[in-house]
Figure 1 (tube, rainbow, N blue to C red):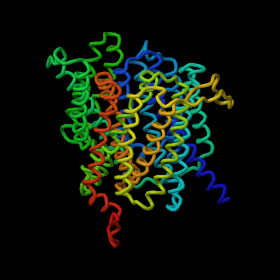
Figure 2: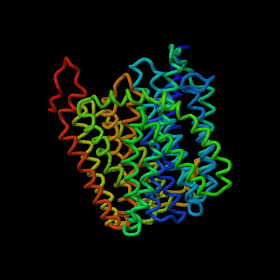
Figure 3: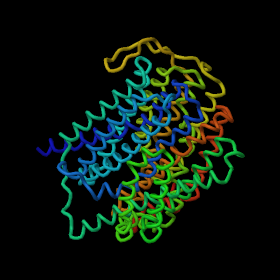
Figure 4: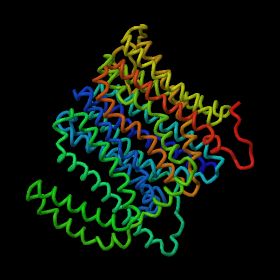
Length: 554
């Protein structure tokens, strides 16, 4: 029986790793391929990369998912079932939309997928920790999770492109929706149940404060974003700046204002009440501007919500979030570490943000060629790179691994510059014969470019090695009291580059051309490596027990 229980735990972790990896490409590289073949321009594709914003803010609602649980399925499994079923439903809805004909609805559906996927990731990370109470099993559990995650990336990011050549993208997304629903059913029936601890006295009152604080924080976000938009329109700069520069200015101004305002509102007080009232005022104004029909239905609901202002004033305090953030920022060099987390993978994220449009539209490769080389072969090489990086880290330790693997990531970006400069076929090609593996088939022979394969190999192996060192850094920065929220916060910052560079990348690729774009990516990768060098004492201090000698670096 112990062996069976152990198998169930690790099988659940494998399945949840697959569930975590599947949606990522469906709002990333696979979606970019769909947008490209549907005729969407590069700038719009770049801006649609912002649909992944929920990945950068998941730490904001992670405490609520930790505190509250849906009934009947035990700790974690209720949230898993809800998020996975909802993912299946939204993916199915997304399959019925045309990105060219309905860009706004398509983007909204993609944001929904990203939000549900980020929420699922929060629960999956916590479940993996809870279901493996023996710390000696954590390493094996993490490896199994990463394997399931990468297999899912092969399916949604590689095999999906081959399927799209044979069917169409809506059909592919319907298959992915069915896979998510299937995973949800298996997890609900087969994953080991985890029962949460009994609620202590006063827990219900504390829970009300958390919810009120979260709602006040959302009001701060709404007021910050809408306030910046109104001021921007009133400034008249929209008529003097280029359209793309204007969109970027408004976007980053909204983030710069909304983020500190939201945190201040989460702490409660008068500002939270003022933002709560102002958010309702903005919403009422918008509804009235849309027409009487909408206002007639929704304005009374807004009025009822506004009656909760005294409750917000009395209760609002998002204590779990505040305590975890205070705990993290008490760490020496906390701000510098956050900057390092953003910069370390920034060059890699910048180069990879438009890889699929570059290969299909810029270089003229078919979807099948990109699916085989960049997604299937590439992801297996990433797994190899992660395995190699893990072995090397045993000898190099954290600081030297971050430095060496960061340099390799920087150098790998030069490969895309060479490919963009020399073009398709510069080193010849190898012919891949047709195959039929039941679940995926290649109807016609496809030629794989040797230069493309070389570039993909370098980029994915170095990326896998860099990811191992990077995850080691995130784990070292987590406080055991707030592991879930700290890891959600740090991993959210790690997604900043991947999400926020997309709009800028789309604009720059058109302005600079592909060779200039990838040359710039090398420059963008440089500060992250330099910061590792300058932060050497702080990084060494992270991994040193108080009774041991600091890592010498020899």
